[in-house]
Length: 191
Image (cartoon, rainbow, N blue to C red):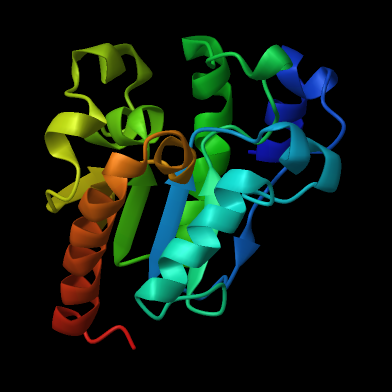
C-alpha cells in the first residue's frame, strides 16, 4: 500500500504546504506521537518545531533524552485548516502511514502526546472507538501494553507539550510522568 499516496489524497493534504513525516532516530526504542502538524511544522516540513517543539526539546533534555534517542511523529501528516481538530475520516486515512512507521521503527515504548494520540492508541487504532476512551487527564503516566495492528509496545500517555505552555501547573505532572518513562528505559535497558 502506498501510504503517502493515500495520505496525499485527503483534503487536508491537498491544502497543506508540506507533508510532515517525522524526525529523530529511525532505530529508536522510544517513539513520541502527537496529533498533527501546526503552522510552523507545515512551513518547515518537520514535526514539533514551533513553540510546542521547543518545549518538548527542553522537557526531554531534563531527563537526558534528545532526537538521537527518540523518534517524533504525529498521527496526521498534514495540518488541518485553521489548526482545527482532525476528523475521524482524516485520522483513518493517515492511520496506515503511522502503522507503517511503527512497523519500521519497532519501538518498545510509545509516548502519546495529548488527548487525540492517547485516545487513538487506547482504542488500538480503531478511530470509531476513540471517543469512548478516557482523556489524557485520567490516564497520563499510566503505562500499559498495547497491540496496534499486531505490533506490541508499552504505551505511556503524556500531556502534550503545547498544553504545558498554556498550563504551567502541568509541569510537575509531566516531570513525574517522564520519571515513568525513565524507569521504563532502565527496565528495558534501552540505553
